Image (tube, rainbow, N blue to C red):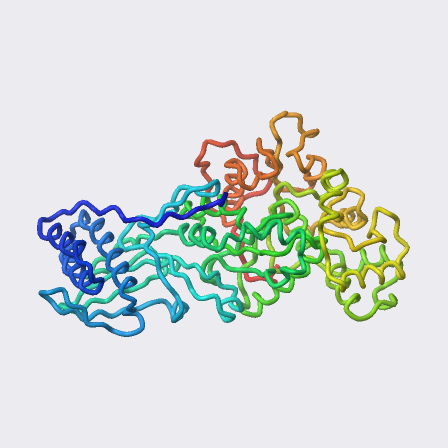
Length: 540
């Protein structure tokens, strides 16, 4: 079953406020030709726009409805006033129709769908994150070309259509709600209506990236090209990035409930932008950590001076996140090889892979970390029959078999380290006895980076002897955390209302926004005062 399913139907018409608009709407609805229907919709829309301009806010719902229908008719006719002006006949009036749009939407392959025709069901579906106002929210779907991927741009965008009239000239403006939530219409400044969730829900329902979770665990090398960091919304140098990192056998889709709930908070929308890192989870987690570093370096090159990041990792994603905020240098390398990197006789691809995975320090562009259900000291499931079966299913390419052979000849490891008969999978590196797991816990998180833990408890109420069913409290607890929240949840604490609310609280804390619980949920006491963060990265 899909975590989110989309249903595209007919929008509910706004209640007409005038007889003339009601008649014009009925005429447009009965017209089979989409271009003629667009002209007759413009007739009704001009009447509604005049009412709005005159100060009648009661006309805004029908204005919004008619704007959505105009977009539907233009899509059905296969025309685009944003690329070429059009003459549109209504039977009584000839309109000159033009369009404007954000620069990054100038993509000849993009399409639109009106949000008021969409409804979503499924376990990830949530209440709408809608800001009321004037305009028709749309989902813009950009073509999946290399340019968009290089820009780290998610192909599904939220935009709002607003139609303005000057005599028989009409302009359809596509506005970016992240840029401004105000718009000028006929001399009036009005709030812009915006839908901040439908683009994600629509994209998840169409792309079904959730299906990649198990496939990328079992055969990670087949999906190497799916490892990337994507920006959920247009990049904004004035907003603080929040980076989601998913866990084992998972995808960024698992963060959808948290994203929808956070975007319903206007203060979060104003202060933050959201990014997500997706990767094949079958590899031992130091490898996707090295991929994340590469992606963050690319982001820094694209957007130098971006604000420091709040990183949120769930499960194994929490371990990857921890490697982003921990100073190791060559310490783990020396512990494993017994020599400095310069004195270790490994060369070629094997050396490159080991250096990327074992030599690292905390990044200067991350300012806070939130670990959710993270097995910092491993999970016993990795050593039991479930983990054993999982290990047997994971397949690796011959290049990693070559690395295993290199390790066999270069290292003297016990059975709890890299397995000598095969290359270690992500499941191996989640074992409490794994050598890397034991070694990384000898290195503290950088002292200048505050971090928080969110822990699941299945309901037995026996913390500190509790577990979320996958990770025990003793593994996910960190003594130096600014705060720790135990939520009555299984391993999906990042989808539990109390877990999501705790993230919202921390984001308010981070941005210096006064916090007020919106679900009457108890928050842990503060261990630090509010302080505004989000400085340009590298400045400490």
